[in-house]
Image 1 (cartoon, rainbow, N blue to C red):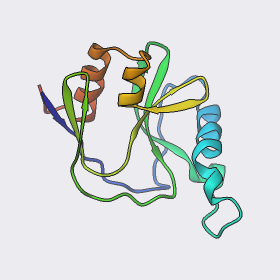
Image 2 (cartoon, one colour; image 1 turned 120 degrees about the vertical axis):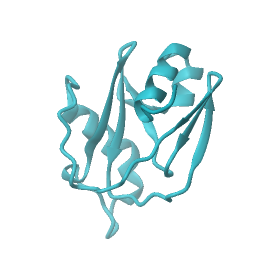
Image 3 (cartoon, rainbow, N blue to C red; image 1 turned 180 degrees about the horizontal axis):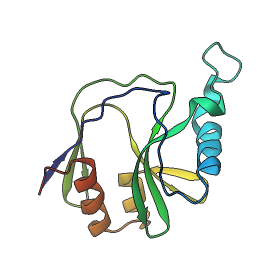
Image 4 (cartoon, helix red, strand yellow; image 1 turned 180 degrees about the vertical axis):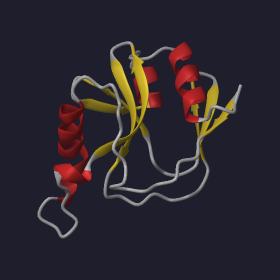
Length: 132
């Protein structure tokens, strides 16, 4: 099954009513995990630069999100095989599975048994609602 994702990136313009219990903690953790490499540079990230761009839901205690941050992503189709499904992203941007202050790709979360095959299919359908 092929699921295709396409996301138009407009950093700093997103404010998501996500339903995430502690969205601030998620944003703070994202800044620590991904923003550290930019500390002390002109490209240093601030908390106000980090937002939940799109919230896909909660699966087995994990939050599934696209994050908006000060990065540029390539606009090229990027297929990823997970649990027998092909999810095709419209850019280099990742969908992250967040649990216990850690971020996983969908593939990493599935391999770590944080999410199930049925969860992968459900997430893929939300990324690209037109696929069956």
